[in-house]
Length: 323
Image 1 (tube, rainbow, N blue to C red):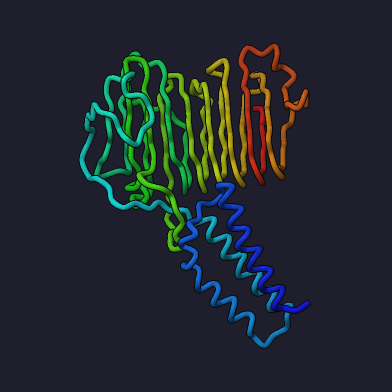
Image 2 (image 1 turned 30 degrees about the vertical axis):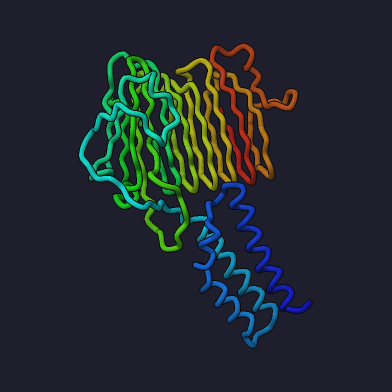
């Protein structure tokens, strides 16, 4: 077989793989930025004309493209056009065009836009019964394992990444909606290396709904001490490790993931049913029986607390652990 045919075949496979990963939301690759990869194609051209054996040239091509693919999928970065600098809390009392929630049900809306975005704090209000957290975690690692007397605190170790976040909270007498999100769309740059770590803490009193958008991030959320009613995770190429407890009687977990490593830890005393739609997933579900297309723990019908898990994933490693 001619090396020229192998060379162009591998190039087409590389570009096709980028397209598949982009369509599966494993990466967010702007095709207009493809020209930024021109040095790679120059290297490949150089390899193709080296006076060496075809097998060595083929190996060099594969190594070069493999390294390029790894670098692209690991370098998520936030991009923005501009951001507002200010200090402290600002009572908006108005509709935010970027938010779909109904403002009429809330007493006030606050936007937090601080020069020091590495630290974010929302005070707790007595009488608050429920809270919703909408959280963007696109690159880096994010940890939730401790409680706070405040409603929520968030700290970023990387000040450069922190400046791309915006924080807001809507409050009523009994409910709060917290939004910790990025100011603009996430894209890839090949020169980004600082991903940082985010540490999140929440209050133990309210019933929580967690809505997490995770791209190429590592999520380690230990929520065994919190009353979590619902957990939604939308992920790309993420490392997801979540733990739920028995503080709420009926827990719903929905995970939609691309090429992710997923571990869900649940109490052994809680009954659990799992619905899966997976593609090329490595599954580990010890202590579950398969009944009518669902994975069910033996105590599901009789347990005082139940957990329902719905997982839709592509090429993933999935593990559900009963502790």
